[in-house]
Image (cartoon, rainbow, N blue to C red):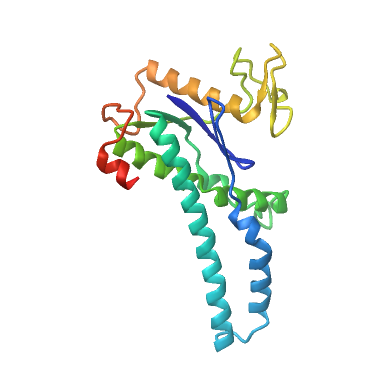
Length: 224
C-alpha cells in the first residue's frame, strides 16, 4: 500500500520516497508554439498558407499530448505493478484549473501566475494519471483509494501537527511542533497514505472492490 502525491514541480511522489520527475512537454515546446501562433496571425485567414500553418500547430499539439500520455503510461504501469493498493488525493482538477480572470465587478488577482499554474496542472495530466491508475489496478485486481486532500501539505506525518508554517517552501517541510523535517512532497504522500489507512479502518469504500492481487495475469503483463 502506498500514498501518491501529485505535484507540479514533481509529477508524483510516493510515500516510500520514490519520485517521478515531470516531463514539461508543453513548456519545452512553448516558444515554438508561440512562434507558430505569431506566424499564423500574420497570414490571411482561411488561405492555403493559413491552413498549412494551422496544421503545423495541430501536429505540435498532438506531439505534446503523445509525449505526456506515453510518460504517464510508464509511470502508472511502474506504480501499479509494485503496489496492490494506491492512495491518491481526490483532486478536482477542473476546479483547480479555472481561469483567474474573474468578471468586471470581481476581477481576478494574480492572473498571470494562475494562468501559469493552470498550464502546469493540465500539462502534468493529473486527471489522466488517475484514470490510468484506476484501470490498471482494475486489471491487476488492485485498488485505488481517493481521500480528501485537505491539509496534506501542512500536516506533520510524524506527530500530526497542522500549520501552514510547517511548509517552509515548495520542497521543504519542517514541523514547528516536533521538529520533524522531510521533503515536502514525501511528507504529503505519507499523510495521504495515513488518510487511506484511516478510511479503511472505518470501512471506507474504494474504487475497485475486487480481491487484492499483487501480480497481474500473463495477459495483462503482455498488454500493460
